[in-house]
Amino acid sequence: MPIVIKPIRVYFSPDKNLHESLRNILGFYPTNISLYKLAFRHSSAAQIIKKGIKDSNERLEFLGDSVIGTVVADYLFKKFPFKDEGFLTKMRSKMVSRQQHNQLAVKLGLNTFIEANNDRFGSKPSSINGDAYEALIGAIYLDKGYKFAQQFILTRIVNVFIDMDEVETKEVDFKSKFIEWAQKEKKDFRFETLNDGAASIDKLFLLQLLIDNEVMGTAQHFSKKRAEQLVAEIACTALGI
Amino acid sequence: MPIVIKPIRVYFSPDKNLHESLRNILGFYPTNISLYKLAFRHSSAAQIIKKGIKDSNERLEFLGDSVIGTVVADYLFKKFPFKDEGFLTKMRSKMVSRQQHNQLAVKLGLNTFIEANNDRFGSKPSSINGDAYEALIGAIYLDKGYKFAQQFILTRIVNVFIDMDEVETKEVDFKSKFIEWAQKEKKDFRFETLNDGAASIDKLFLLQLLIDNEVMGTAQHFSKKRAEQLVAEIACTALGI
Image (cartoon, rainbow over the protein chains, first blue to last red):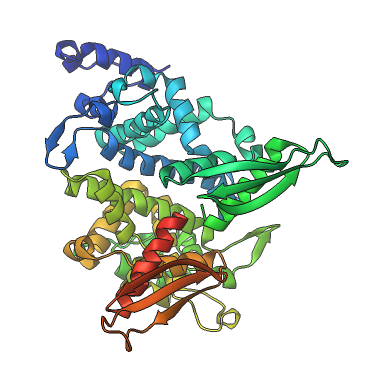
């Protein structure tokens, strides 16, 4: 790890501890610490600062999400000079998925910094972690600029936590993708087993997926898991998810 | 306009004319001219350079699209400090729409540079222009870096061609959005008038929208145009477009 000189302002900051903890995670001392505080504030713990606007991390998340997308697009563009844009798009969507960001946040230890009002949830949703990760990148971008944010994402995230071979071979998890969409759009859905294969010679599971009680598609496979993935893929394609 | 010193390499370049034309449009001389040539090459005019990959502008378009998204996100974040992320997202989607990019490309005069094989189309689709605009931004980003691309987008595009008040008040055009999706997903669809209102007292148009012969929704309004927008909005919401 390169030597990082502690800026004089840190010695006198009321947020000295936060400066030091962030230094350990990020590898640098923040300049504008208030951006980082904001990045860790979930909307459940935020105050209304003006009509219609809260001091939560949602705006930073919007910005950071976009910065991550561009940094990863650049990385893939250069890493795979002979792959077409379809491949690049697919790789990126796997690298920047909600699930991936939730995991990265925990691996970086961001979850310990998050301010959230847990009373508002039955259990703390894991997306809070991913949101904080995206907001943190937004904060770094505003605090230190694009190049710095890019450097951070590549050296501290991609090179450390992401196994590119695994990303390349990993199948898209259509079931998760579908469920995420359905929850966002507040749709009722269920996977219904029509035939569990026990009684038939071929032992094939036959499943159907219903959205708001309408059949979206059916699929069969020896494995129930694979059948679910197949029918979710049909739905994702039909719905343009 | 600031004075731009002509680099010596331009005097000796076989692409001297292209350098000068781009200087007029962009306000600077490209360093790596081959990136810009690639940005203007539509896939219909591209050669296969290796199995499965063409020297077309599609990879640059993937990159440039992302860069534009980030630059616009940053711009909106700073321009509207008291608006929430929902507002920022909506504004961005209006500023970076396909239609907007097609128009910007023509306003910048990029259409005159595009290499495309017109024999392959019945008529030249206007999306070719928007694609070239996005690819050009990708080329600038790779050639000159993020800050430079950002500067270009803000001073030569946003400040010159985009009327932010108009963007803010403009309704989302759900019909175009829906048609774009349907064409991409190769779905058959039609807007069907069930009642043109002529015979009824209330003079309301009653329309339905069908996708692959299935009714997606119905809507009514005094204006046929508004009824189409309404039913397209229903479809966009249901399909998560």
